[in-house]
Structures are given as structure tokens and as C-alpha cells.
Amino acid sequence: MKRRSFLLALGALPVAFMAAGAASGAERKILVACFSATGTTKGVASTIARTLGGDLYEIAPAQPYTAADLDWHDKASRSSLEMADAGARPAIAGALPDMARYGTVFIGYPIWWGIAPRIVQTFVERCDLKGKTVIPFCTSGGSAFAGSADLLIKAAPQAVWKDGRRLNAGASASGIASWAEELGIAR
Image (cartoon, rainbow, N blue to C red; front, side, top):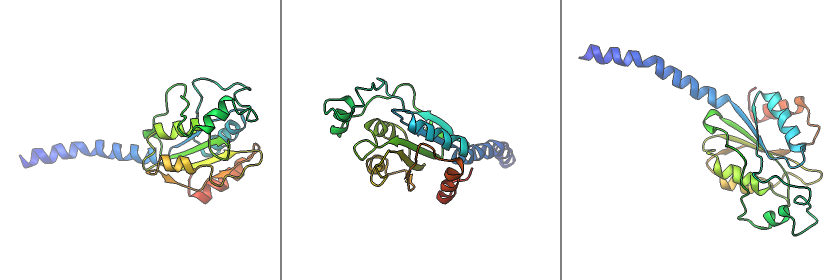
């Protein structure tokens, strides 16, 4: 009986090693998720994904934003109303990525009213980020990064949040690689 148990356990070793290899592979896999209203943030996210060998996922709204929706001068525009409502969670089009495949997640967004748009909160709240390394980044014509990710961090406190930053439209691959190195993220 002992010999049979030993042989059964021995037969399970390849499965255990394969499972351990899959877990460590997921820990190294990078997802770059972004919401981009005008294409600027998506361009930066694409550069990050390309530079770090990550997968790109666009956080697309179920109801696309029109130019009128994005008119922040109009207090009745869709974006103004969403940002004035702390409980607004715009729906995301399509399926969410399989988060079990990733260990590191970059989350990019334009800054709206000093914070991430509400649809990015939808993404963070609907994805299981527990134990994931999460790095927020934003694009903006003039707003600073500081504080823009606070609500995201609050929504997923079980994630390991790293310092984010604002990136410009022309962010270079070498600059992104240096930032990733500062964060301890291997390519």
C-alpha cells in the first residue's frame, strides 16, 4: 500500500511542477489596461505594452462617448454628470480580461476633474486585483498625477499598488523601460 501511494504521489509531481510553472508565468505576465477618450492614453498604453511585452486591453464604454459627451465646459454633458456622481459606474463593452493570467497590471486613463474617469473605477471594481502588482498611469495636458488614483486604490486595497505617474503623448520606449526598472518590473 505504501509503495502504491508513493507511486501515485510520484505520478502527480509533473502536474505539480506544471502548476507551479503556470503560476510563476502568470506572475510575470503584464496587462496594460487603458481607457482613452481621444486616443492619447491608448497611444501611451500601446507603447508600454510593446516595450514591456504586455497584453493591451482597452476599457471601452458600452455606450461610446461623443464629442458632446466629453464637453467638460458643459455641466450637463455626460462626462460632467458622471464625474459629479461618485456612484456612477459606466458599463464596459465586452468581456473583461482573465485576470488570473496576469501578475502585473498597468491601468491608464486621462485625468478628468483631477481623478480617473468613473469607467476606470468600474474596471477596478469588477476585476480581481487581489495580490496583483498594479501601476496606474495617466495622461493630461496639464494636471498632475498626484491623487488621481486615490479612488482606484481605495476600490482595490488588496492589490499591491506601485507609484504611478503622468506620461505625455510621446512617451518613449526607453523612458518607459527605465520607469519599469525603477518599479522592479522585469521585461
